[in-house]
Amino acid sequence: MHDWFGGVDSGTQGVCVRLFSVKMTISAMVALAAIAMAPTASADSFSLLGNNLGLSGVLGTVTTSQSGSDVAVKIDMSNGYAILVNGGDLGFTTDGTLSLMDASLTDFNVSGMTATLKKNSTIAGFTFDFLFQTSGSGGQAFPTTLNFTIRNANVAQINGLGLHICVLNGTGGCATTGYATTTVPEPATMSFVGVSLLTFVGVIRRRFRS
Image (cartoon, rainbow, N blue to C red):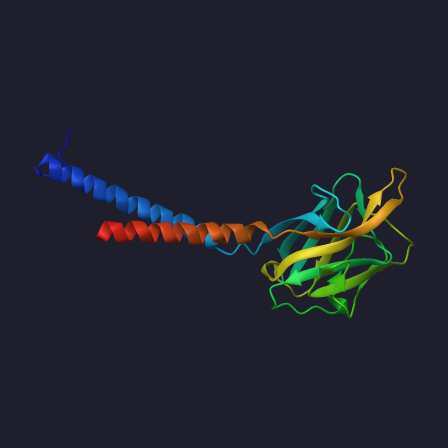
């Protein structure tokens, strides 16, 4: 086997190998921390867990994805739940940098559905930065999937969403209605992981230097 250390004694070789391993470990952890903390502004996923009906489990999933200068929103309700269109509400919590108006919500996949910004921002005990009332020209509808666009927005600006839901009665109608809200999106957790990794790396570096 070739002697890469050019005659250096085995003890010194061992120290060199250990130092190299520590440096490589630190470099790898810094890279992982950077990945964890990088802003994932292309898409976010939220679970509809909070509600005023005392229901448990995931009532639905909200996915936001960047589409040019707009944000595409898709709401998929879990089995047994739907979205109230006429007289319904859509609420948004943001990072404070987003400004929404009547024309901000467009391209609903439900024919004739529109949304109008309300003056109040609290409903059923839930408070939002922006609250819209929805309506549909084709009469009442209870879709289980809803797609729409938020104009001039970024995924990173949207922290959560709430909506008026329908608990289906098994015949296509509503047994009762209420409100459901989302939890914090996953990227927030990833940022915490990144900070934790960087803290751990700092401790290793200080011990290594001492």
